[in-house]
Length: 184
Image 1 (cartoon, rainbow, N blue to C red):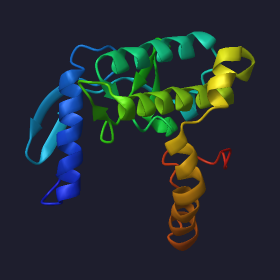
Image 2: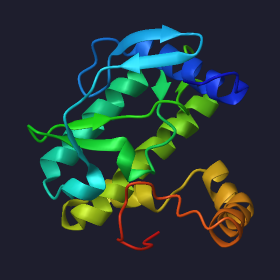
Image 3: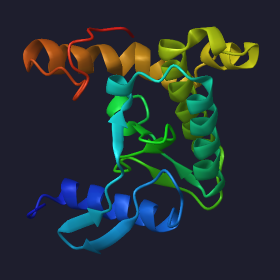
């Protein structure tokens, strides 16, 4: 239950809005109920990417197709860097979870396109981790070209964030990732 934490309530509202836009989208949890202090979505059977370790290029092809479907609907996930947000379903298909940071845009303007580009780059980073031999030349070029906001974040904000969360607070920020260690 969210209680009266305004930030948490805002994340609930955002996720409810996004899931409402993505109604009937396979590979996305369906919104069951949304209230002022709760969000209920259905359960998708599968394993988190870091546990399933998908090596099939078909998984990543299907995940890219799902991502394009989200983007066409005006949704940028904005949190695909976290492997626990990507599932490998029992039938081998992909699913995306945790839309609390997602953005819905009807116009799909410049900011939306930057966020969508970063969604794609994060998906390709996962592909590089699990089946690098199947990266195409175009995908390698995309990986080599992070957006300007992404580059700026990596140089300015990320070092401070990592210092505070990992050194001072002792957080791993890799929830559910087990003992794989740092890679990025």
